[in-house]
Every structure is written in C-alpha cells, then in structure tokens.
Image (cartoon, helix red, strand yellow):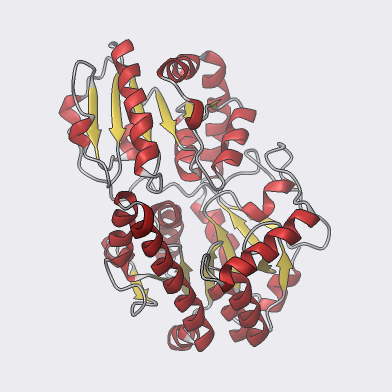
Length: 435
C-alpha cells in the first residue's frame, strides 16, 4: 500500500476537514502521515496518526499558541513588535524550505502522494522537483477559484489592480512589513522546475496543480476555463467521530430552541466580545430560547455565562454534537462550520469577518441556507431580526433539507479514496496536464 502525506495549515479549520479522509485512507491499508508545525502534534497523535514536525527550530512547540494569546492582549508598539517577529519567522521558514528542509523530509519518507493544504504552497513546489504526485487540498473555499463560481460569489481580478498589489506586497516585504512570499516562491519554483500560474491575490503565483475541493457540485462548481486542470469534488469530509471537548449537557433543556454561537478560532477577541454582548442582549429578549456560546481561548466564559438568560458559555464547544440539537447557528461563515450546519440542516446567521468568509456567506444566502449580517453595523435588534428570520423558517428548512441530502449523498469514503488512489498512478507532469 501507499504512503500518503497530509500537509495542513496548523489550524483547526484546516485540520478537521482532513481527518475523515485520512481515516478512510488508513482503513484502506495506506500509511497516512501528517507534517506541520510542532504545535498540532498532540492533536493529530490523539487521532492516531503519525506526525512529522517541520521547522521546529523556528516555531518550537507552544510558540504558535503563545503568539496567538499575546496578539489578543497587546496593543501599539508591543503588538507591532510581535507582528515583526512573526514575519521574520515566516521568512525564516521560507528560507529553510529553499535550503532543503522539505527535501530532507521527502527523501526520508518517500511518500507516494502528497495532499497539500492550499496555503502550504512551498511544499507542493518542492514535491514537483522530486517527481512526487501532489494535489492541492482545499479545506476552505479556494480563493483562486472563487471568481469562477456561477453563483456570483466573486469577481474576476482586475489586472491593473493586481499589478499594483503585487508591487506593493513586494515593497512591503523588502522592508519587513509582510512575509516575502513572492520572492521565495519564485526562487523555489526555479530550483524545482515547477510551473506556476498567476492569481489575483497574494501570493500572486501558485503551483499549477489539480484541485481537490471538499464539497459537492450542487453547492458550488467552478467553471474552469479550457486548458486548466479540472477540479475534483470529494465529499464534505465531516468527521462525525472526531475528538471534541467536554460540555455540561445537564444545563440544556430539550424543549427549548438552541442557538449556538461561534466565530471560529481566528476571530479577534475584540470582535468576538462585541458580538457576544449583543447575543446576551438578544438572549434576554428571547427567554424561551437557550444559547451556547463558544467564546474562544482568549476570553473568559464566566463573563458571558448564566444571568437571567439561559446561556451556557465555554471556551471551546463540541460543535458536531451541538449542531445535532441546534435550531440556528450564529457563525463567522467559516467554510467548515457552514458545511457542518448544512449536513445537520441548521439554518445560519452568517457574520463574515475576513478571508473567504464573505464569499461563503454569499453562497449560503444564494442557496437559501441562511442570512447574512455585518459585524461593523450590527445591533442587538438587527441580530434578533436575523435570528427570527431563520428559526423555524419553512423556506430555509426546505433549502437546507435539499442541500443536506446532497452533502450526505456525496459523503462516500469509498468514492473519495478511489479518486485519491487514482492520483497515485500519475506523475507530477500528468497531474499538471490533467483536465
């Protein structure tokens, strides 16, 4: 059997979607190995996977969590100093990749297939130089394909604006204000002979690969132009058996509608705090509902828990189990949370903050799966109106039932494994030309 290497970004939203797929490949008899920064080693070993840490001398175990905690607390000069330190470490990772850290990993492991997160660009470039089949595993809505979606979620990049942005990022990189992605990726691509394609957003060049997306065609199908590698749709890859945190289930009542709140793991504490205060006001106006609030690692749940409203506040919530009971979710529009809501038929109030979240929110509204608000202009009255429009709404329930059926039918581990095993027989050149 084959050795298959997963290379996720070291964040829960990029790791969790890989777990079901990885477990299916392991059950088929393949050797499945993960590589990433040391911070996520314990989580993946807890799921029973081999793990190879990379760039541990630059990001030693615990540093990512430490820097994230500091970023939510620091202001002004201290925050800028921390950001500068992070940028310097990111540049050091890029230099280490150029100097051969990934080469040594690949030579020792000799994987038959590498599934690279769409944000782990440097490893996919190095794989080309070693002739190792590699596919881009998009655990979120892929930015480089958004403008190809027929739902109107995105717009084609403007060439003039893209040129200005490229030069601006290049100049900011030279003075140490952003990582020097363009420079290092260009040098790495030259070293490994990797063909690149232009995209209209940083880092502006991506390896020319086939894309694997974790959602069915009914949700969104990129209309790829002629000559570009096709997009492969797998199931949504929702791991219903993943490890989740403990929760005080005795505090919930089965006869009350449950509103679940989470803005994900990357929301700034100030953003989350402001919305949490509005949710508390909404909870007081709807005493017949109950609320579970996942406040994140940087806020104290005790500041939002209890009171006259029925609120259970925790740092991290067992999302899969809660969605089985929820009447609605207030979400940042993170792609994995949206997929899990669809799977369980939970209507959403999306409050997108950054990255692909506005595009995901537009698609879910397009399909009638929920509604969208804006954090900047949000009031408790507006939030209550958004919730009232989805809780118990027959049109949203019907749309969710249709899309949930598509998701459940697409969740075929056998078909997903067969698709990835098909990649094992191809060379890197074949992957680049496939279509």
